[in-house]
Length: 211
Image 1 (tube, helix red, strand yellow):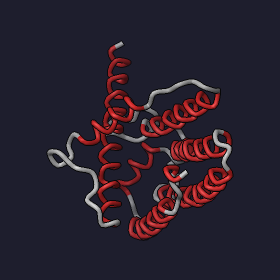
Image 2 (cartoon, rainbow, N blue to C red):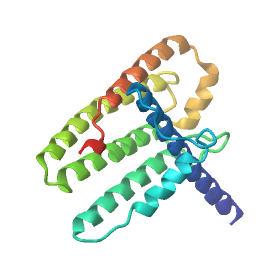
Image 3 (tube, rainbow, N blue to C red):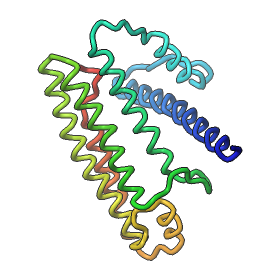
Image 4 (tube, helix red, strand yellow):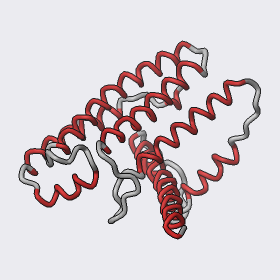
């Protein structure tokens, strides 16, 4: 019972940390976009320490749902499934010496979860919830770049797998195999180059704010 309680506490802490860090990353992105467009960006209080928290509170307070048709329920379902996939992928990653979920082919499972969280949300929201052809074309364009970026991420996983030939895509085996890395320099160059290519492809995706 105590072990289950510890796991629940760890899961709650992970979710809270992810939500808070997501707010700070969004704030940093807004500041960078403001500097690019020669604007000041959002006004900050105490260097923006409480701005992500207040933005999250305002988001939940303004998200008042009036169920007019079943499309709203489909939208909420797509959001919940995407959020569950995003949070689930964090439980496979090691936190110190704690790994909540560790099986064989863990990186393959992470890849599948990442594909579902990206493709399902874009396809469902863009193709079924709106009747505008512009939204449909934007969703198709976003899915196209998602497929390309997923291919780049799969190559990143392949370079990680090349560090340890007997890891079977397991997180624990890869962490142990890093102690005996022989081809670190070659794979690190490939990893960094593919990482930046994937970041450039993700930056080309059209956000749904313009739909």
